[in-house]
Length: 331
Ligand code: NAI
Image 1 (tube, helix red, strand yellow):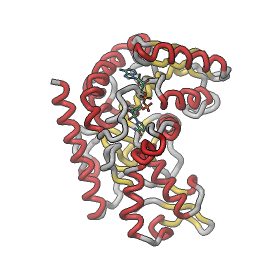
Image 2 (image 1 turned 90 degrees about the horizontal axis):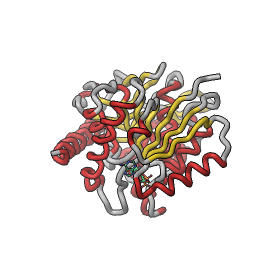
Image 3 (image 1 turned 135 degrees about the vertical axis):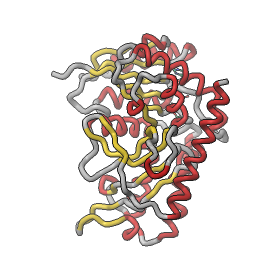
Image 4 (image 1 turned 120 degrees about the horizontal axis):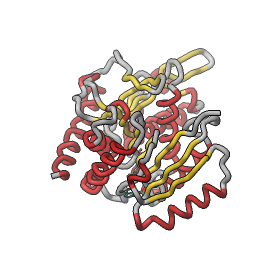
């Protein structure tokens, strides 16, 4: 039998945490044969709620779950962790822009970076979910210099899945037959969901999404804004931000990163830019990536037309501004 892997979920007492933790414990993140020890971190006011969650995890009798640590102590939480899903933070509420929550979050991410740097396993893989996700991940990277930069990522898989979901609904095809959409840039309303390289598996082979949808006007307008605004639409409907779909996407992100992407398929991940596609280095930016043996690589050589170029640059520009704002919050 495999050795247990230690997984930390920060902000575990929150609503994404409540959806995410049982998915992990059931094996949705690392597969049905990988036992795990779960560390759950939250802050003082959530102590009782965190205790309750631990009780429920015990009561659920998950065979893969070999231990649960529920704590408000960052050092205890980070001890020897192999995988870290950072959901803890100050959430965006209805009517709030991500920038409003920046200063609250940069100080959290700076402090947690130091704890991870000192106490996590040296090869730990980190996924930042809490917003502003790209910039929180960047702060984490800067204050945890001993963690390899390739190990620090942020979640844009939810946006990627939303884009696939919209295509699947529009064409009435299985979402699993929709492949290779891309979400470029920031996990914000400037993100660019791009279907120019996406295909659908049909009875007569792989067909480009553009050919099947036919209606370019829908693809270039409504499709893009629907995906960009989906988070806000869910807040409006639920009065709370998306939780189960975010949790599910976090499992998809880690699963594909650790176990690899299927042949011929890529996924979107927020990763440290190496300058691919003219995106400035020094940003955590969402790119199409393939994963193999626990490593991601940015898909190279995709053609970027003028329409896409503008959108890809615009979301990069927003990330540059967020970075400047984050730096100013640190001073
Ligand atoms: P929530 O408010 O229900 O949960 C956040 C939890 O974090 C709370 O339990 C809170 O006590 C805890 N927390 C706050 N400061 C902390 C700290 N310093 N250390 C540890 N825990 C701390 O929020 P929810 O709905 O679970 O969302 C969490 C985050 O995920 C938000 O920032 C939200 O905007 C973001 N999000 C990101 C998505 C993505 O695709 N990247 C999608 C949906 C949400």
